[in-house]
Length: 106
Length: 208
Image (cartoon, rainbow over all chains, first blue to last red; front, top):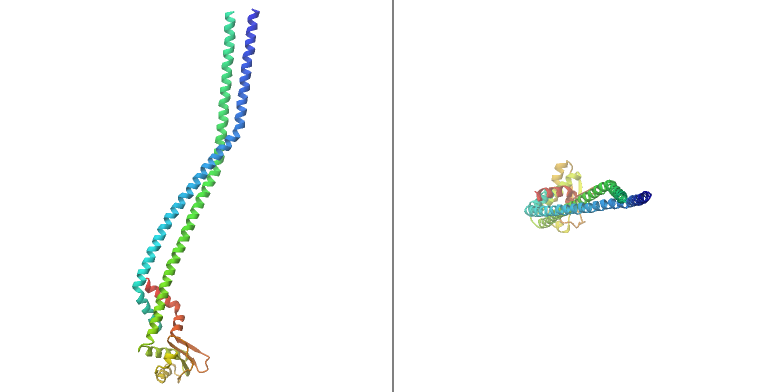
């Protein structure tokens, strides 16, 4: 009977040791998580910012392309306008010269 | 003895189960802690991200507007300088035609008219007429012109051709005998005097 109690007590002690070790391990896991927490925070913060920077660059690229298209349109309109001016000026040139002479002589 | 072994087995099994549970719970808690930190990082970054994107959008828009505005200024400048060139061409052609006119028979009555106009503006009396070398050789009826000025001004007028010969294309300078008041009716001066109106008129006709 005494042998039996002794054996049970030993196993109790062994069980306690297992649980104590597990508790210690759990504590270590939690501590490590707390320690890693700040770097996880920094990583998440940095990743979000880096993603945003990429998006910002994309916005700038897209807007620059839009501007390029608008500039091409503007340039083409200016060229058309210049051609129109040339055509009108050629057509009305003598009429304008006559008007100047008229203003000076009459 | 068998029952004792069974009891101790149970004790050890229970202990191992509990230990496993403790570790699992710790791992779960650790994962939650890390997830919370990750979310906190994202959340804190959100405001910076919002500002960064807003800044990028306004910078990009500003750059776009700047380049378009610059291009518009440049395009307008090109068009305006093209117009200016055409206006100058008209003026140059008009000057050429005035030169040609001075060699035609139509010129004399025009010159006489310019002298009369100048004489009237000066109010008649003793006046001196300055013509270029070529026009000085023309046979102008100065007495007749003086008579017309007298009629218009009500003052007896005398016109005298000056020895001085200005280097002008055409037209006349008329001045009082004492030289104090001058009326410049040369083509050059008329053009200069009326340049603003003339350019306006050219623009209206040329680009209509």
